[in-house]
Length: 275
Image (cartoon, rainbow, N blue to C red; front, side, top):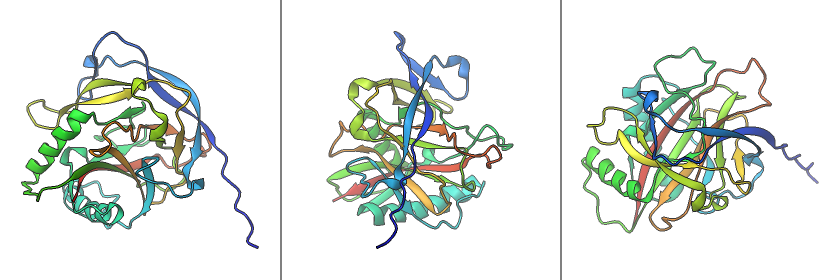
């Protein structure tokens, strides 16, 4: 008989949750003086999702997929916007069975950890959040089809998928924690306004949701991510618009050695259309 593989022990990670506020919440990544969000850290158990069998985009809301990219790791946003988006559209078609997949052009992000010497790029988003509300999911469909000048055949359903790939070597000192969507209640979330660029450009202002603490939340991560591995998680599904897949945040892996390479990642978002 084969020797059973020992399960990896969960880690204790710090997740930053939103605190109660009577104000309408707002984050402006250009001018943090306009940001009124406040957070409180909670120490939570974060399980290694490599030990889970049969992960499902329809159930937990996230999976780990294998995909070799010819351009992941590039710093050239023009190349990534053209070639990486194209690669991932084809990968998502194969993974989900979607008829058409289009990229959200404003959703391509390179992030580098605070220990990195890289400049001019985004830092990890260190608070639990969901990137779409129902209203804004539908608005982004209109934006995406407009950006791509896409004339789509009628579709029955659409879903928004987010992809996260580490481009730094394992082990990652900072990585993605993702919450089982079935453990997040609507009452745990609060809408907030986001500004990421000039407000006259479509897609630079939108509404998302921040998460408040609930001990029922079940958090996961994938240890020692390789460049040919991609976390795919579902942000919205028109068939189940009330599902809360999948809250996520950056978190520091307390088991990473002090000399681990600073986290680097590429993130992208897509709208998939189904017959």
